[in-house]
Length: 181
Image (spheres, rainbow, N blue to C red):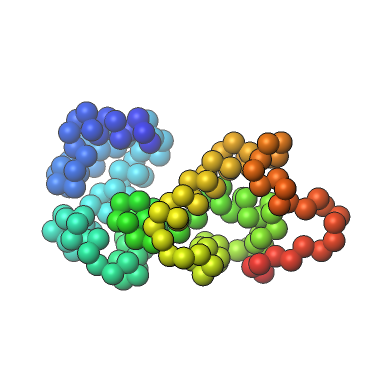
């Protein structure tokens, strides 16, 4: 996605007003390097229309809204799911919502902290209910989980050197209690 963002910046279309004006087909071409570019272009256009219909195209105005209410509204935007919404709220809006991604779920599963059927909401609640609601802490926690997931807790685990290794029990060391069932 970084390459696609670079193209949008070079083409001077990385503002809400320019994204609103650009044709979906042209937007898709600009973000081609990100993969699934046609779907992503459609979703970006849905979000931008929402921004203009509800907040006159102003991100500042949008982020003045209460985080919980804004989250519910954003979840209604076609093609925008909880991870994207929470990323928008945390990183762009400075609102304390914990972002759950595939790395987070994989790490928690492998350390027997959640069950296989834990939902996005269940996993998010684990953090939101047990940590102070602090934007910089949520940002840091998420960044650390991404780091561990990217370099150690890969699809094929690479536990040697993992900073969480000492917290993982070896199989057969008794029944492990999962926090979410």
